[in-house]
Image (cartoon, rainbow, N blue to C red):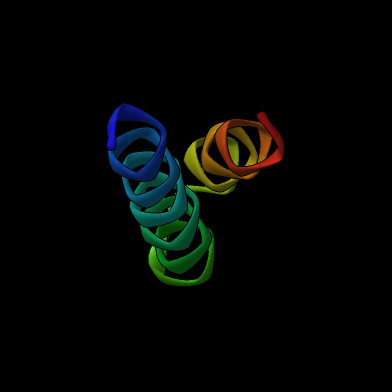
Length: 39
């Protein structure tokens, strides 16, 4: 149960940061979101 919760939490965080990489106007912020999506 707890592992499923962590999986969905990290999956949502990865998808959200991936979308922020695409939509970020500042290139530095895009790089930060890209680093976040790698971890």
